[in-house]
Length: 288
Length: 124
Image 1 (tube, rainbow over the protein chains, first blue to last red):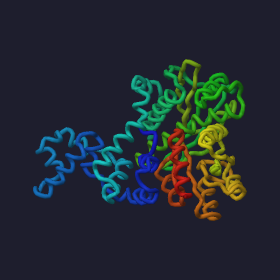
Image 2: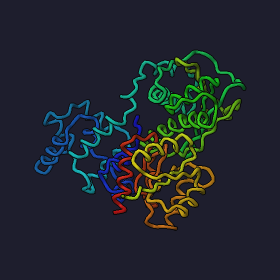
Image 3: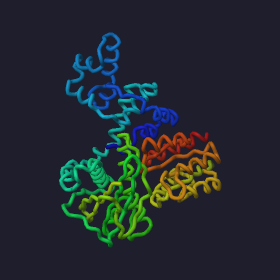
Image 4: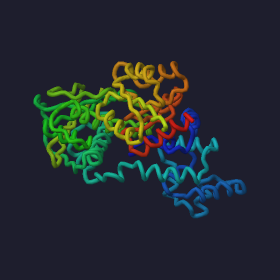
């Protein structure tokens, strides 16, 4: 899970010009990510070892993977892992940078390392203790084609709660029922797939979310409180879109809504209750 | 005395405008605000800012459409897009239309400092 798209990270760091980033983005889909970059990304090989194997390839008529095995740089298991790696947009972009000569392998290795260290939500908020709970408590029919997407979304939402609200969320085993007194914060994501996301909470809980997210002292449900609660969902959903973009799925975010008493409209709604030190949030999702 | 840098910020979020104004004023900038894509085009013509920070998802006129309009009015306009969806498609579209940077929300102070420096560099 990353908090920023790789190309954007490179642009923000001033490592390439906007026109170089634009050119590499336009060309990235036509590029095949080679084993060397896959191995660097996994941390199986250093850029120096990859360069050495490239040098050997010019003298020995063998493939990259065979030489890496012969030299003892990769194990068979590692090679299988690399060959099974699914397409990943940020690596396509990285390969394009190397192919175009905008970066050396060593520079790419460094920037990938920094990108992961700075942007990884997994490192910033470990919620591994909740992963099994998500699967057991969210009752989604396994034939629902978006089942994994819902699991991923909840997982990211929980991380966002740790990161932005400074709380330790816990899933509660209850069935969600609509309560018209609660506040309702919602946003739709449409594009290659559709996901409507929302959460409901009592006013005091929503106020606390607004305070914690904004870092401001907010005492009543005024414009800043409504805006801050909405921005929390907006930024969380933006991170989800980036992660899907890295998998080649493009989604657009629609403006978020914060109202009292509304409910999500969708074909099939899935909900989990999340307990925090300041009260309960009900996370409700629906597909197209 | 050097004239302060004039920066126009455009976002429908009151929170973001408040926080970004605070960041930019700390850097000595003179800040103007717009709440949507229509207002930002009008404000650009009125204030002739040195740079613009603009959200992508905004009511009335989107940030991308506002970027197009401002570039039609002033091709050299220095515009930095802000978005919670820094996807490949959004980034590519903004760069093609001439944005000089693209900042993912939530941003940090160093990204804003860098963006302001980019505006100054392009100006000089």
